[in-house]
Length: 78
Image (cartoon, rainbow, N blue to C red):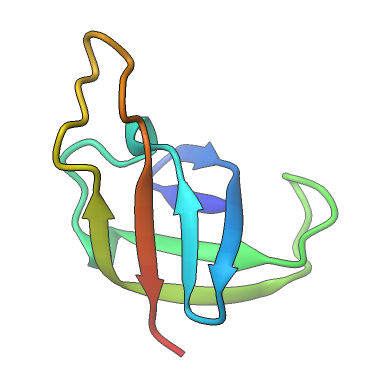
């Protein structure tokens, strides 16, 4: 799960220190404003492991008004 302010979004692990998520979850966000939680059973749960985000890699052709290329890779600090 990706936490970006009050927004929560799903994610998929693609490498030990990287996750894939929706670009719409990250408009105008800075890496230090986001964290990722893995292993949580429920959105409202308190379990899981929290990781800080080191870098945001949004798709260079993301267009929110057209909903195309709506992906981003988050590199995690471990």
